[in-house]
Amino acid sequence: MIFMDLTGLPCPQPVIRVKKALEEGNNYLEIIVDNETALNNLLRFASSRNITASWMVEEGNYKIKLETEMKTQPIVKDGQGKTLFLSSRYLGKGDDELGELLMKSFLNTLLQTSSLPETLVLMNTGVQLACDENCCQPLKKLEEMGVNILVCGTCLKYFNLENELKAGKISNMFEILEYLLLRDVTTV
Amino acid sequence: MSRLKLPHNPKLLSHWEGWENATVYSTEGNSVLVQTVDMITPILDDPYDFGQVVAANAISDIYTMGCLPELALNIIAFPCSVLPKVVLSQILAGGQDKAEEAGVLIGGGHTVEDDELKYGMVVTGFGTKDNLWRVGGAKNGDVLILTKPIGTGIISTALKAGEATLETINIVAESMKKLNNLPVLLKNHKIKINACTDVTGFGLMVHALSLINKSKLGIKIVAREIPIFKKANELALSGFVPGGAYRNQEWASPRVIINATPAKMPFDPILLFDPQTSGGLLVAVEEKNAELLLNILKEAGFSATSIIGSLVVDKEERIEII
View 1 (tube, chains in turn orange, cyan):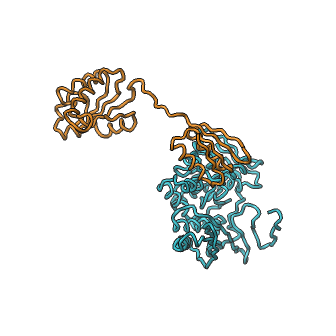
View 2 (tube, rainbow over the protein chains, first blue to last red):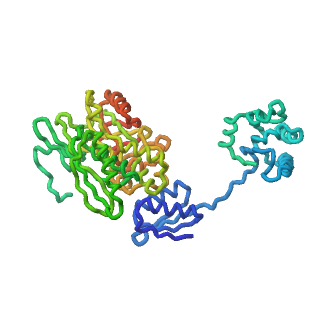
View 3 (spheres, rainbow over the protein chains, first blue to last red):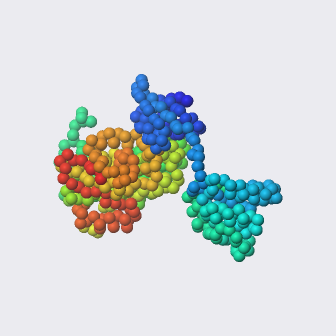
């Protein structure tokens, strides 16, 4: 808990100070202001951000208590609505040989999880996974299990792989962007 | 104010009592001289822009009376020990350029040293008795037109807090710099303006109430038709509301009835009370003239102009927001 005496400060200073204190991670603030405008603005600020606020008059000033909810990450129970974005055939940067092994293992493990993503987006060298004899197997299975696999058409063209696609469907930047902007995306 | 004597002189057609925007003084025959003074503290960071806003804001009061401004004097309070002189000259250049655009000569002025910068103008204009636009005079069935969006008070409060984007500031600055020169636009049109005021420090609601003062009329305003600056609502909800808005709300709220559901009024009601600088004109005209007037205003660059409501009979003289 921190205590803030904001008496004597003109509008909009009290809101700025409180906003900063919250951004610094303080979850519980006790604030004193000396004018109604500051009180009203702080209550407005709180209600727009779902911060619990209470106030009382104390010695001619206004004492305000603000309490934020502890932030908890919502746990995604299954992969519903989730998009995995693969922009490389290697998992991680560094050693490519290791990266290729890790990607294979990643896709095979994904097959065994109970929380499949809804969509898998393949871009750049990531599209080679859908054309490669070995890697296309887990991708094919994922597709059979209902995962929507989008493969970047421009990338296939670039690598001359247009006729080699073994899993997923050819997509364009417009559709891919829609998934990246509107869904819960994890970049691999 | 109650200790002050009301000025009585047959030549004085309006004075500080009541809601008139400028003092009207009868000169010869049908002619009148109108005079106003206005002074504000900086609301923009750019001194040249601020100077322009001051001029547009001060000159507006002459236009609201249906008159044409001609002469002005500067009044300045300047913190010489804090700000460099170049700031002063930029502010005055802004004021002069805007005055020139309005056809107004700045004849001189007066400067005092003060802790806080303030700039204003005394403006003199001329008109005729039979074509004066008064604040009272709206009739039942008239429509009410607002020519600029509201929200300058909230946005300039956010600007002080460093919370307004450059894009937002620029849009508001352009609007505040725009001259409310409706009498010029209507020179070649026969549109009778029944009542007119500008929306300034008292906010949209109080200025709208001034139009129906002692009229036994009320106003029905459609919330969705009120033009509002982009981001103003978001900034109001974040707590960047100037103290004046709360004072305006306290004063006006007994006579402002909000009957709009949140879906019909998708903004914070405090916007209705936000004090404006160089806000738009609020004009009452017969419905048959509304479309022509709207087109004239839009063509002149008042792109947000909107018919926001209409006059109704109400002996309690209230505003209903629907």
